[in-house]
Image (cartoon, rainbow, N blue to C red; front, side):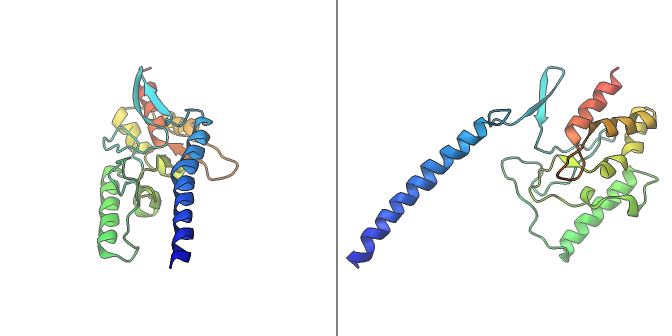
Length: 186
């Protein structure tokens, strides 16, 4: 038994040093190389911080674009997805309720036009992005609520669309809503 205890103790000490000191220091050093120094990129509007670039927010007013639903109620301290599968009756009821609410808020939009991302939470529960299609399906409601021309709001969505060579195009919902407020105030 003595023969196994000493190597186990040494291995425990080595892993403590690696996992509790070296690895966290490497992650911290890597974060310092990021544009925001590992602090998170904030978005400001009228000199006031309104949110973070990579953390979704809940927009419920009709004059704003709505992002993906959140399984954690947009609480950045507890990032998580739902643990309910696609055949779970509670999950299906939640998705149906989100669809019904969306269709009431967006008259003229059919069930087939609603992208799934507007009805289901992301894996983190904090996704700040939508596809251009998910933003476009909301244009009529936002334009009507703000008394803006449809074409102006469509152009704003196109302007705020981020194109990527390595993934799908996406729209940051907070940045889009801030740009929308700026457009309204001109």
